[in-house]
Amino acid sequence: MVTAVYSKGADEWKLVTFSFTAVVYEENSQRNFLSRKTRKAGGCFACRPFALKGEPAIQSVTLHNGVKMPMLGYGALQMTDRAPCEQCVSDALACGYRLIDTAAANGNERAIGAAVKKSGIARREMFIITKLWIQDAGYGSARKAFETSLKNLGLNYIDLYLIHQPFGDYYGAWQAMERLYAQAAVRAIGVSNFSPERLVDLCMNQEIRPMVNQIEIHPFYQQREALQVMAAYGVMPQAWAPYRRLRRHLSKQNAGHNRGKTPKNHRAGDPALARSAGNPHHSQNRP
Image (cartoon, rainbow, N blue to C red):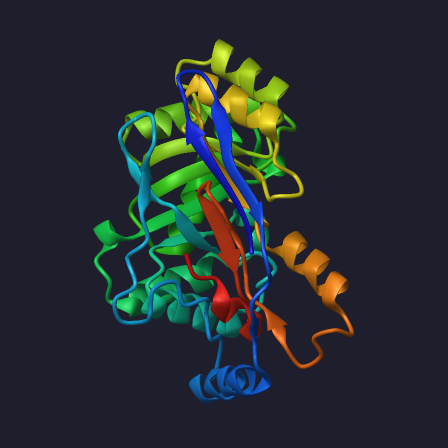
């Protein structure tokens, strides 16, 4: 298992542990059981984060404005077909996930909104993230795009609203998001895929600092400089693709040696997003 754990010191995020030990494999019979259960459920088996008796609930982190965000979330990237997306999100919620991450560019906000509504879970227990796409950067267009996302999701507020990419008039977009935050239409605002330079520029020239920067982080791409900058400005890192590249690397390493077996997932110590689109491998994305 690969483990990377960061702790926040006075002025930086410090890599405190990094270990690489033997990979644990599931036998064919267990994998086939998961596959049968997936088909029987009519959708995605969905990354069971704490479905087993006695397993702990997902921990949370506190953003610089005091809002608590779950450490592990369920990402809905590349899930554009409504029915499968709705089923996968429903399964994830049933298994214990409470943070759901999407974006306007994903084209699945309506499906996610439907799954959230059908779940019967109290809104205050959920943490919904969506993102503003490049074409809507700018003050007026960002306000309109937010209202569209809110309507698509069927919600009356969003927990975390992010600028998806640092392109276009993201200054204007950020000012619109500051206004939405002041109006309590969002509980927190942040950015995604911002380099350290872009993040510092935004922090130094706007009224409100981003609460989150969602970036690629995994043991093979630790982003130490970016984490140090985020720590200095009080911005919480959130990792996307924390498992995918690691899984691909380990699968290549063990190809031919472990036929018929599946490597378990691995986790980093930063807030992270897991994703499943019906693949039984993702049933192993447990904290």
